[in-house]
Image 1 (spheres, rainbow, N blue to C red):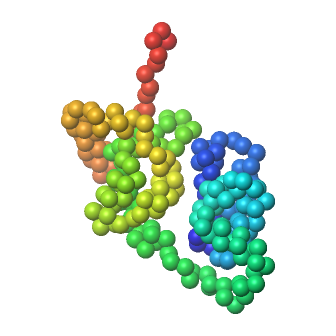
Image 2 (cartoon, helix red, strand yellow):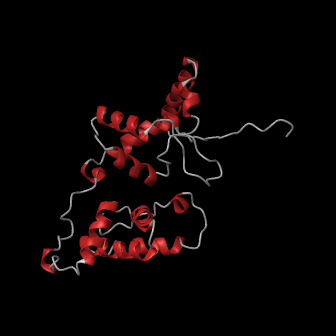
Length: 214
C-alpha cells in the first residue's frame, strides 16, 4: 500500500455506499495507516482486529486491503512483545513492490476497454456497476492483451473503478442467449467507440421490467 494514497474502504457496507455508524471510523483508519510504515500498519490493524474479536481479521482486511496473513503476522509479533522487530529493520518508504497498475500504466485503461461493452449500472448511482465477465475471464483477457494481472488485482481495480467484483446476475442469461444478442452488444460497443472518437456525448439508460398489474 502506498504511503501517499488513502485506501478506499472495501467493507460491504462502504462499497455499497450504505450509510452506517462506522463509515467515518473506517475512513479514519485508512487515513491513519496511510501515514504509517509497513510494520506499523500491520501492528495497528492487528491490534484493531484483536480488539474486535471474532471476525475482526476479516473485517479489517476488507477495510484496509491488508492481507489476512499480514494481520495474523502482526498479531504474532505483538504477542511476542515485538522482541524480534528492531526499528532499524523497517523497510524504507517505496521499498515494497509497486502496485501492478504502477508497473503497467496501461493496465487500467485496458481493463476499462474490456468492461465498456458489458457494463450494467444503477441509474440512481446507489449500487456498484455490474459486469458479465468473471474475474478469471478478465484476468485471462488482460494477459492476452499484454497486461497480465492476477484475479485479486483485477478485483481490487474493479472496486476502484466502481464495479462489483461479482459477476452480474444477468450473466447467465447473456451467455445462454442466441448469437443475435451478442451481435447487439457488439454493435452498441462499436457505436459507443465511434461517438467517443467524435467527441459526442453518450447517454446510458438502465431500465427494469415492471411486474404485472403495475
